[in-house]
Image 1 (cartoon, helix red, strand yellow):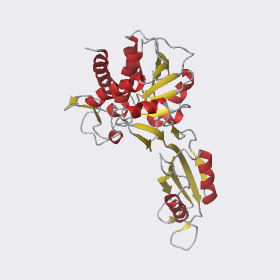
Image 2 (cartoon, rainbow, N blue to C red):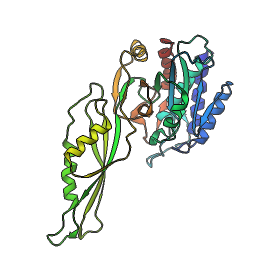
Image 3 (cartoon, rainbow, N blue to C red):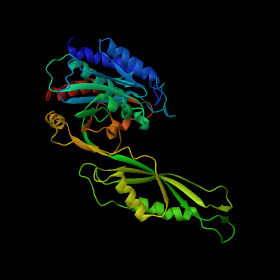
Image 4 (tube, rainbow, N blue to C red):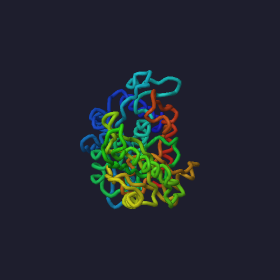
Length: 354
């Protein structure tokens, strides 16, 4: 059995172990131990910070550039539509079922196998760091954002998310804002008060229809969606306050501050941004990683969803086995063949530049 076959078989067994172990965001300590123990079997020095872990290739040389291989080991909660035990990790008809199998366990174990494949090589052109991050599903501050400064200078990253092993060379950023519209309370039976809901409807209509001028070639236009609304206390009282939340997916042509200014210039509301952290990210088509992928027949696209890419200060390529359409779905699964092909493609992708 050759090295790749051995690592692939181990990766599938490891993924089953991870799926069988609860790892909700902020509670990934048990899967962190599993990953640490697995790496230490290879006599690798494992570094940890809370529920994040990382390892460096055996002949790490600070004079060389560094590529980061990153994916996450936390999961969302299982939704109520599951008909299987989300922690079973059974393999049926070539599918490995279970919570986190597709998002992003398959990516995680495939990148780990890739790291191990190159771990002992002495004459690599790049250093390699493998990092398993926590809290990705909630964009938490104790995940990649906490770990990243500890890794040293990172020149490029491959972020493992299910993309059918195609290349997401750009990713939309995220801005979430809470808006407050104020009216005046009054009795619903009389012509009094100023209905905050009616005032909010005009503002919500603006969010629905407004189009930002700059459209990205890879990420398309900015998208704004009102996703939460709350107003009123009882049926016979005109509400004096209406609160609503807007989810804004940002392309690389605008900063968060630019978006906020445009919104404030166009609506009358109190606006409070929840976070300014999740920025748009991209990697140049000319980058060696992307060019390597092109030679392997991989396609390029812009991703509307956010990942740990948004919190990295380096060119990053999002790419991994599995299908984003299965993420967070009931009876989540990944094809075993996708993991096998993913490991093979990751290795070839890096061989072209290492």
